Every structure is written in C-alpha cells, then in structure tokens.
Image (cartoon, rainbow, N blue to C red; front, side):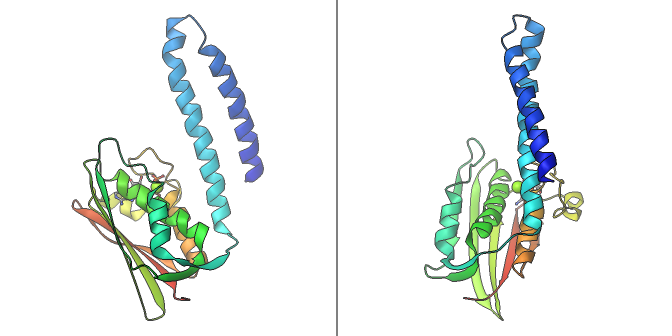
Length: 208
Ligand SMILES: Nc1ncnc2c1ncn2[C@@H]1O[C@H](COP(=O)(O)OP(=O)(O)O)[C@@H](O)[C@H]1O
Ligand SMILES: [Mg+2]
C-alpha cells in the first residue's frame, strides 16, 4: 500500500510540474482548463495520503496515556475549519479533570474528523455539543450537531471506506474512526440523525 502510494505521489508530482508549465501557455483554451487539472491533481494527492492513513489505521500501534478530555476537545476545535459564513458555536460540556486513558493522537484524529463532519453539515451555522460520562466500565463521548442530518442511504455505508456521501471528502474519516475506536477496544455509533442534527457516540473501556 505505501509503495503504491509513493509511486502514485511521484507520478502526480510530475503531472503537477507539467500542468504548472501549461499554466504559462497563452492559449485561452489551455488557460481555461489548467485550474481544473490542477485541482484534480490536488484531490488525487489528498486521496493518496488519506488512503495511506486508512491503511495505517488498520493496525495502529497504540500509545495509551492519561489525558484531560476537555483539553483535547478544545485543542481539536482549534483545527476545525467551519464552512464559509457559518457561525459555529462550541459547547464543551465536559468537566475539567475528566481523565481518559487512550492514545491521545489517535483520539485527536477521531474527534477532529467528527467535529469536521459536524461543522461541514452546518453551512448555516449552529452549535456543536460535546458530552462525556463514565459508568459500567465505559467512557462514552457524545458529539452532537445541529446540521443537515445523514440521508438513510448514506447511513447504510457510513463506516465503510471511500463512501464520501455528497461531500467533497474521500469518505475515509469515519472508516478510520471506527478502526481506531475498535483498536482501543471501543466503538463508534450513530445514535440519531434527522434534519435537526446528528449525534455520534464514542465508547472507550474506562481505564481512568
Ligand atoms: N455529522 C454529520 N452530519 C451530516 N452528514 C455527515 C455527518 N458526518 C458524516 N456525514 C456524511 O458522511 C460522509 C462520510 O464522512 P467521512 O467518513 O468522515 O468522510 P468525508 O468526511 O471524507 O466525506 C460525509 O461526507 C457526509 O456526507
Ligand atoms: Mg470526514
């Protein structure tokens, strides 16, 4: 997988160089199509790195550590890019000092994807809520948005790789999230979704 990825990236890099010089052309026809060509190559490069990410997530080497969940969530939110003109509010209903034992970097990836999806689903803005509780040997973390919801058809294949729905993504985010949660002995579930929003739940064995 990583060898194919490497070769593909090299070919794409050459394609990028060629289209860069194409962009210098005076021919209006060529000038018109070059940006699209560049964008297509960009997407292909992105797909490459995400595919590799997915392959890696299947056998992740976990490095569990104790960390403060609230701090991690607020770090994640610094990396979320809301849709243009959308005012997204964050509501982190997690007590300071809520400690979790897990691979912090991997949990960061899972939460970043969920928060990114949620933000993308709220083009008109809205609130993204985080909640966490422990009990019965589990920690559960809920992520709820006020977005457009997930259509029934897309729900069927939500956690399968390369099922991006209508978005511009690669459809790997939730597949990776599932692999990573499973690797922790936990899980991810879609709890509810409607035109008023969507809620996912992450579960981790409670080692706090
Ligand atoms: N919170 C959400 N609200 C609405 N749709 C969602 C939400 N989360 C995921 N989706 C849908 O599921 C698709 C797959 O998500 P994901 O696996 O993260 O891949 P990607 O983000 O690359 O498209 C998204 O493209 C989107 O259509
Ligand atoms: Mg995603």
